[in-house]
Length: 270
Image (tube, rainbow, N blue to C red; front, side, top):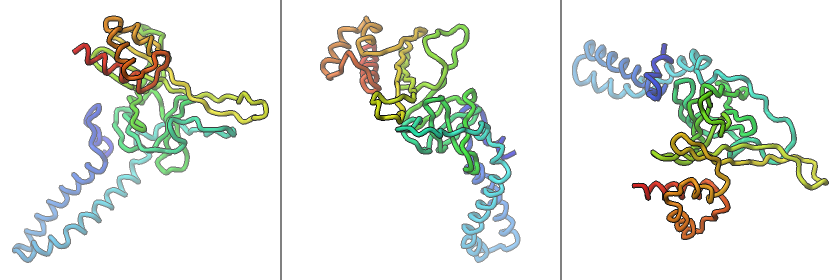
């Protein structure tokens, strides 16, 4: 019952703590009215004020413990499968940014969860978190993820249907930039590779970033800034001048350079 009250609709969520505070506030008001009816007068109210905080906090802790013990198994966020961790010795790690659980937000199965400890496996494109007891890691169901945010990056899913372009493979994409004209994404992946040195037999994880640009209904893969200029031919000279003035290499591309170019292009269209 309590879990159902947490969701009012897509994106409209009341946190567990807010729900508990609401319930206990109602308990508090009714209890206060009861005390006033039995012990009228200023002395009784003074006594209640002194004991109020302790009573409220104890009730909060009790109700919170009951809530968590009864519904934590049923929270939608724990609906994934057990995750098998890597046992192969290798340099680096297969995860985004760090080989550790970090707090992030995730919209999962119709519910928004804040400050969830998780990590993102770039090899298998999986979001990993521990089960409610912290005993073992679980892999979240990708089809239930609306979006997630980790280390300040917002990842959104792309699941093409029969009418969409095959320019992008399905999976999670880091949304770099968006406006009414363009959306820029990065597909971040890691692969396990053997070193070129024949004396080194320990493989290493290497990250590969592929940049995509969507302009209305068209999808482009970007390997250089120069390719971006060819897409925006209407402002090619202005963009080229901007790149030169800001020491942006046209033969390369990065999160920062792509974002700066798109922000400038958007300013030219206003």
